Image 1 (cartoon, rainbow, N blue to C red):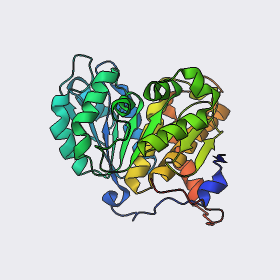
Image 2: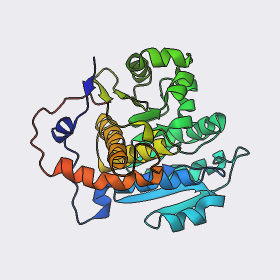
Image 3: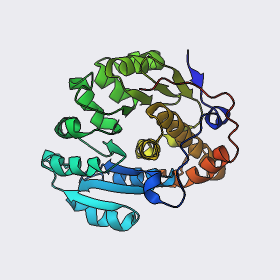
Image 4: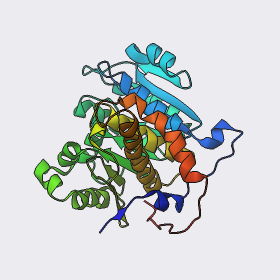
Length: 303
């Protein structure tokens, strides 16, 4: 049994209200993202974190992309590091990334990584030093396959995966995921102790030992390269703002899907660009937060 995510549900589950006058009160997010062949993913995730109200974003990416990224996202502070043979971040960057994470309210790892092994190695190298909320996105979830209980992570965790990535983590065929997505997502949430957000035609959010949610908003236009990177940035920004992991995943999944609906209505059901999604989020937030009645507030389990 799962609960459908609606605007009314979110209004009854309000986000933390930070002081408007100080950027640090709205959270600091660290985005560890991008590779030599996918540098733009770091931009998509960083901008999404800012659009959801995070006050400050730092980005750790490959040196070959750092200067261009710093110009494209002038609101962020960008740090460049050596590349692994795959073009992903080298594990030699682990110590500095750990230092950056120590001064962040939430850390996102994974958007744009291209090699599962390199992604898992980097997560393993920094895991034990991460004390705050951590979000593992896309190929960074490969770390979970070798560490299914996430014992090295000292803070709460959110996993964002697509069906093929979930199948790899659970070591099952993708047809099993498609047959019963909610059961598969709940299985991973129970095994790992993390909140899990499955991105698919109907998004599913599972909490360990707690409720399961489904997001039915969204359409085929969201099936575009980089879409998941935007969603990951939204969730990470909400975590940095102080949202609990389940709340961040539910809100982030709904905002991502509904932003797609807004663009589909204005631009067309297909053909809008991934980089246009995040700009739809601030008015969506305003619409949800202007009048929060508090009625119908769910009581999700704290992961």
